[in-house]
Image (cartoon, rainbow, N blue to C red; front, side, top):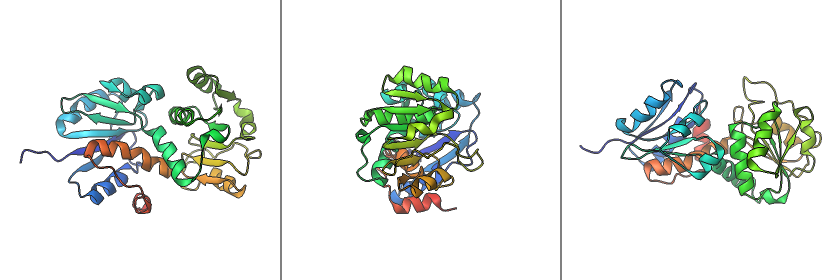
Length: 277
């Protein structure tokens, strides 16, 4: 046989928490594709050599997670406009000639998750409030601007990171002090937590939701636990809430299609497969 079994995977450190192997494994089995998706714990020091080596080992691409998203972007030969705008890559496609193509599908996954799980959601209906200003927030802000959000209120524990978003993305970004983060929820149509607050093993989510509107669509990028205290409190106020798992599922689809040539299906069977222990 001259054809090689296609390989893909996810690189990060640590990586044992990643649900991506379950996600892509389910898609491979469902499509009847003879291929493998492998989690790889890679140090920052080894990252350049690993990325150069993987294509020669039969890898068609990889997902990239913390802490390598920015470094992976800088190691690529080709970069999509959205990855350049976000300043990070979560998907690498390896060409046959060895070139590395970097993309970022986090914003796509974010929007697809809201549109699927909050039918009728429209970013144009009112201000958005984004909690956090890290890499995930950059993807969310980029997506919200593309979707037509009239203004995006941003808060972060360290204000300079939020100010950096305003400097980069322009006057539609309004920065709010972390000490008064709850105030920016008044009148917000879309509210998104992009921080790790409320995640299992992380500090609790401590932003006041007193001014959260009952008709807001509320999304938490955290998916462990699936129903975070933030989402529980928002649901109790009458808000439509969307968990973070859908973003993970949707952001993985474009990469899988590029690597294996099949557009994967995102349905209840997939969610069950990814959530199964």
